[in-house]
Length: 118
Image (cartoon, rainbow, N blue to C red; front, side, top):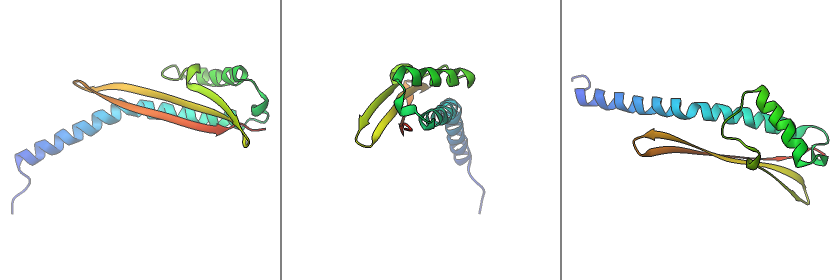
């Protein structure tokens, strides 16, 4: 029995390079989303959040974005508010598109819906 052939080793190296490039390309965006997500959860759970205007809520989110150095991808337009019988909700929806290889792009859609605290 022999070890792995040259073609197998090259294929494994190319696959590892592809995975590494993906992680380096999109890793920052996923880490940013986790920070944005925690900010949105904290602001939504603030007592009286349901009584605040969208402008007041955005000012609080924007202040926290500045503290956490969130400057890319997330804008005021990505936040919407809705009401139904169960309460008031804040919705976050944004997309990140990064060039990957040649004419291929990586696209990530991030969505979050939080109930605003009464």
